[in-house]
Length: 146
Image 1 (cartoon, rainbow, N blue to C red):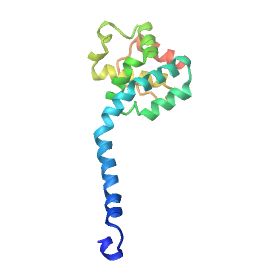
Image 2: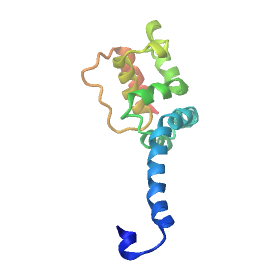
Image 3: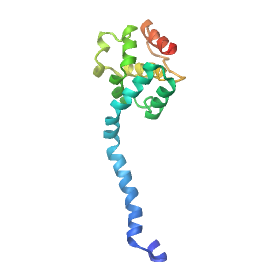
Image 4: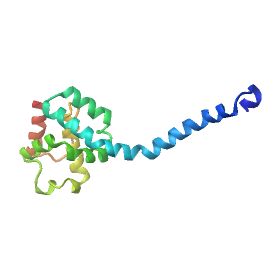
């Protein structure tokens, strides 16, 4: 309609419509594979920031990756957060049944996610209505010390 009234190149009008459609389609198709491919590198950077006590970098990575909003994404990150896992094991939180990270239930994964958020410099950590024993409290205390 615009071309009929104003005139102009059909190619330019078609190009202006096709490019955004292709961008949206590619974003939808490639989001999961690209995110999954980026997890190891981002996990190592987040682990390094947690280990060195660089709360600013850890918080920035945590928030940019939106780990708190996506438990599945946290599950992908967890094996790369070796510093956090070492602290959890040292405090006695990672019992024998929790050592296999692939077999964690939603409750355990969510509890670990909230405890890792403290290590990542988050000011708010919702551990209400969770069964927290001494070992869980020790992990959170270690996070608050660093």
